[in-house]
Image 1 (cartoon, helix red, strand yellow):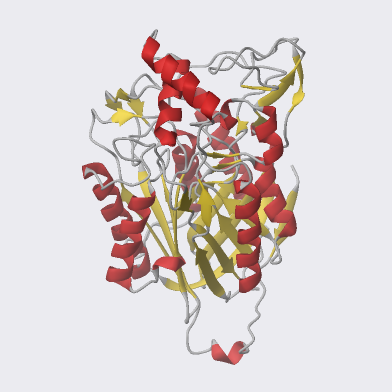
Image 2 (cartoon, rainbow, N blue to C red):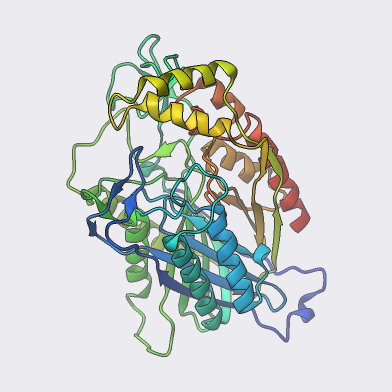
Length: 474
């Protein structure tokens, strides 16, 4: 296990004396966003109603205050969050707290066992909020307000710990002729989630990111306030039938809280410690070792294993972090224009003929993707994409509202003008998968029209803009 740390530096063009009157502060809180039983779970191709709540879903909130600027970071136990939900939540936060909407980061973990905060039709870009979406927006705003109210003079540290054993690239090159046809009747060069242990596997089509990136805040007396972790793991899965669950993200947060507070004397005057686990860039990453598959497990067994192992290794890493009494806080928010992907004339003809023939079953992928292609045909030419960069001392966080391929996150880490750096995906919206142009040419589920909804060069344009935004914060 490789561990690397970098303490937050104390630096400001105005000088340290400008900070003296206003100490650095931090506060954290959680809001319950569990949906009522019966709302549809949307992790698969065909949504189905929930029948049980296995574990509660939360919006986990952290507020940082350097005396001049306040940042709010929110991570929600959701598959994704519609842009309208983020807009409404940030509007309410600004109204309640005065924190500018550009300074609020709201992301989803990508649990596949949550009800939809993407609206009645997750492929509809513009829509009003339904009852559950309004509820989520309200609870996010409440959580940030409570986190702000909980803030206390604090210290901050940043670090990383490499935990590669739980992350695997899920896109594989296979022996010629062994990749099955896609729903469009054509051949891809790679296969998502190929048969584990298959002799036809050749090599993964992309890298992994083994790092868990950490931001830890504690009181000046040393009492822990919160830890924000970010790991590039799609989700774990293996939940009970029709059960709502936060997946490994929720179990990790609960276990880390236990470990961090085990030796702390309970104090009803002090707000509880809050753990947050955001998703890094995991559009092509999951928890399946395709070369050496694991035996079948009971529901939640693998979730528990991954979450507890991560929590224990993160807890060990926290003991070596170097805390500082202050960190400069900055934010940059932009909405660059990107073209929607539209079906070609050939794809449109195929979609029309497929729909006319009818669905062979409720899970007929050809029919499902024909419907998606025709929906994209009705999209406008372009849309704006919410991007955000945050500076916390020497650290830079970049966000995108997509399921971002791992190599894009690695490139942001290496090229960012502020170091260290990492990315959080599924922030401020859900715009489908974001592969690189190279990966688009290889094909596979993540590149299919309807799964991928933005123009072929979107990843390059968005990354270029994000790096420019990071440079503005330097």
